[in-house]
Image (cartoon, rainbow, N blue to C red):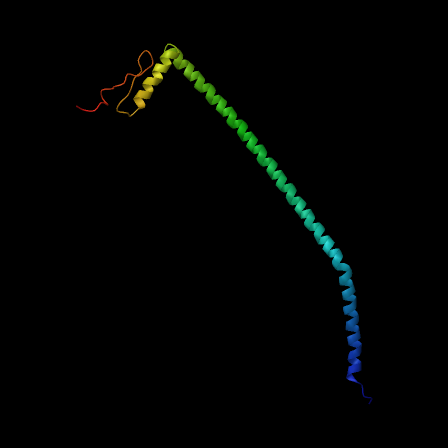
Length: 137
């Protein structure tokens, strides 16, 4: 029986392993740059899709705010028209602007919790009580 050197048997496996490792290394060097380009392209497409989605959301929010502002403005106009009609009815039923102003003055006096109220005279000036503030003798 012939003697075989165990190192020679392993040399073939080592060469095969080195060959496979070399092929894998060359394959990795060729494929890796293409994979990086591919992954960057996908990341760019994802960023573009996110930007477009954000833009659409911003447009929809702006439209909603505009519609809300228009509706609020219409409601304010309707409220103002109602108040103007109510004031006109009160003014006409109280004998004109002077009667309406006197009515508003009376309403303000009723709502007031003040202890001292100065009422204007015909000239529009209040009558003051100068003696009330004078020092006691």
